[in-house]
Amino acid sequence: MKKLILIFGIIALLTNCATVATAPDELDMAIRDASDYLNDNIPRGSKIVILNMQSDSEALSDYIIDELISNAVNDRIFTVVDRAQLDMIRAEQNIQHSGEVNDRDALAIGKFFEAQFIISGAISELADRYRMRIRALNVQTAQVQAQYNRNISAGKTIMALLKSSSGGSRSGTSVASSNTRQTTQAASNTTRQAATVYKIGDTGPAGGLIFYDKGNSIGGWRYLEAALEDLGPSIFLSGAELDSLPKSVYESWEKTMGDSGRGVGKGKYNTEYIMQVAHARGGGFGWAVQRCEIYESGGFDDWFLPSRDELNFMYGNLYMRGLGNIKPEEYWSSSTWTDTWGSYRAWYINFYDGKHDNQNAAKQRRIRPVRQF
Image (cartoon, rainbow, N blue to C red):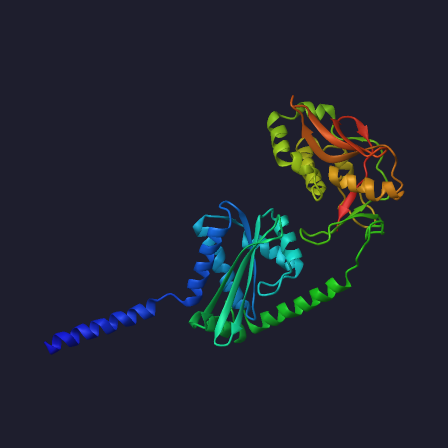
């Protein structure tokens, strides 16, 4: 009997040890709980950006961000912005995974990715425990949609990640690499502080006039600069080219540009897309977009035909102020539209009165190249 009791005791002890050994780490449990909380408090089908996790440890921040992204992808509740795309914006904006991001920059990033919610947070030491906070910011209203708070113990995972950050190696990255990143970061900060800040009407890097300031550099640009000269009257597209374009091209054009091709930031894309078609249809020689694409001035060759809204800012910020030697005549934009009957048309603005309209693309109108920087 004593032997039987001893055997059962050993089995119970081994079972208990196995249970302890395989018990999930408290940090992982907290991250999973946070993901469930977000699933319950953010509308299903929303597009989210998991932006940053402020902490004193880059490794710890990376770990939490990766787990949140993994949970969101596997749960299939939201659409999650790809981390590789987000890292490009972070690098451009000088944002670290473990750094603090103000709401203005966070909202700008959310709008750039056309997301509905920005997920950010922080984890900080609290005596012998850690306080983790994760919140969801509504991009449209700039209001906090949900906030998750939890205290967790400094378990094995947290301690290992903290040691990884301070011990010189993280995910195979050497101390030298870390020092290189810090040096690059410092150089980037210096460059950022030394960057010129322009006002509307100032002379830009290419010698043109600044007519739009986005307020941030998300997407690789902040300002729009207009050339100091028109390229003279030009057709948008030739009637012959229009007639020869197959219906599939019209449909692709409308789907790809359409209404979305009218906004600020779309002119460069419109020009590139139209020229893709032009190169496949004989080069587009003499088209408004082709003349802008080959234009060079001030040592720059990245000019394009502005979108309708970009052209409207040129009207208000330059022409209405008597700047840029702009004529009170009609100017082509690069924005397009197909009417109910399937006729291809292009948007223009009459600078005499600022009115917008769209018309047959074969008519001659003035063009003014612009560029982003």
